[in-house]
Length: 158
Image (tube, rainbow, N blue to C red; front, top):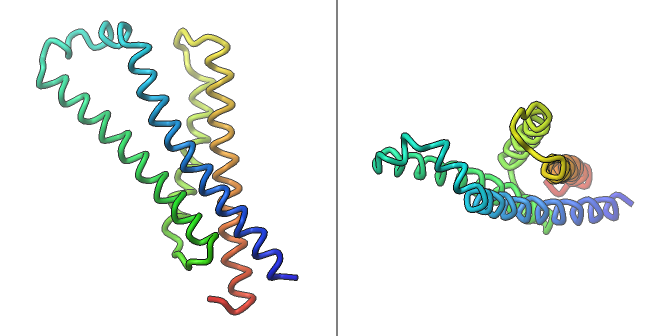
């Protein structure tokens, strides 16, 4: 009976890991689309910086680094979860990062509601849905990861 439950939670872990990966790719795509769509607004906002090419290069490098770090963390969590779901034993490192991602999702949801910008109701709804989906996927991943580790220990597979 426990082996059936283990397989079910391993499957949930692989699916949740894939969800984290897909949402990571969406996060990068969303940022790139945002930059292109809001290009004029961003140029006005950073008018002082855009005149200084070295300063603008530094802003772009920092933005690219933040996007890359976010992508790498999400890929690490997603790929590690999938590997453990497929039977490979993984440590707790990806779980720590998954908790961090969950906390950041909660913070992001809170900040969405306190945004005083000129965000339309449609943008607000989409942002809430995407961020809530990300939070649910991470929570499912955490529940599955802890359950898989517990069941493996009970079945003597540690």
